[in-house]
Length: 131
Image 1 (tube, one colour):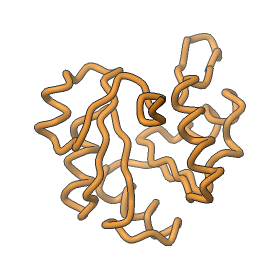
Image 2: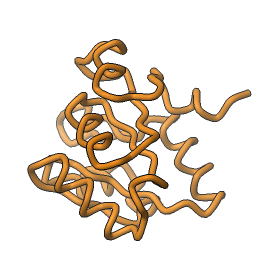
Image 3: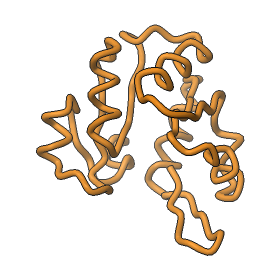
C-alpha cells in the first residue's frame, strides 16, 4: 500500500490507492494486517490511514489475519487477501480465504506466490481495475 523510501519518506503506491479507492466507493471494508508495529504510523505518514477500517499488527500471520477479519466482521470465505509475502498467502488460504492475490513487488517470484496460494499475481493492484 505504501513504500518506505527511507529517511521517513513513506509514499503511497498509486495503483494500490486507486484499487483501494474503488473498493471504498463500492462500500467494502478494508483492513491491514502487518508484521510491523509501525504500520499505523507508516500509513499516516503516507497520508492514507483514513482509507482503512482496521489496522492489525503483531507476529504470526494467521493470528493477524484472523484478528483483522474478526475486527472487520468478515468471514474468511468472503474476504480478499492481498500480499507480497508467500507466508501471508499460505496463512490466508489455511484460514479459508478463497481469493488471495499475490503482488510481485517483493523478493518472492510470481511462481512462488502462486505456489503459496495466490489465485492471481499482479505487479500493481491497478491491474485489477481493468480497462
